[in-house]
Image (cartoon, rainbow, N blue to C red):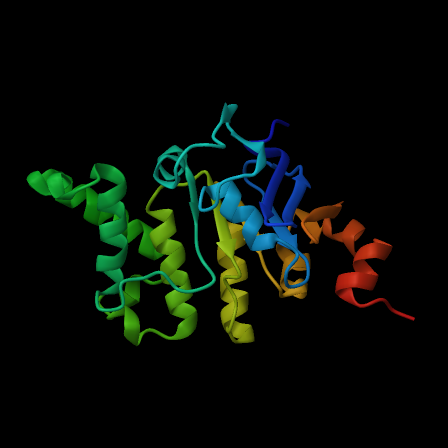
Length: 248
């Protein structure tokens, strides 16, 4: 199977620190790929470089056979790479529906030109409703975003990312601060999304990662130290000692 996105000897250096050190990661279509490691391991930096938020020091990012290493963020989004952030990126004063609709308008037209016809507006609205149904928030469409519970705000951000019709979706700690019930809801959503797209998850909830991931990448000081399906990661001595807690 050919990777939809992969990195080749990807590096990011800050002064004398290699935050990402010759990372080779392959992401397959319709896969949940999780990236784990302790604080400071380089997880968020890695996805920032892949998605264009940070420039690579060296190495390359290949998406669907095209070298996108030097492409700006907006071009990567148009190609099919979206992401969420550790801190919510929503419009707090707008409704749930308006948040997603604006993102959909931006993706389809880049401006309000798309509203020039009733048909265009109907298409945008219909696609917005489909996204809200997919993230199970259609019943909250008229709620002002700032009034949502924390878990629903995180789900709304996923909906905004989905408005770009991504083929690869990066989620940066989507369950941070969530209750167990909210975390389970996100886990179900991620598994559902992976039936159609690749989902790359940076997450500290190891139990969740083990339950929903197809492949797990383990980072330590910017270096990929282990990679494989959950069972192999559980049995990896380096991972058990450094991240999961080695049993006596």
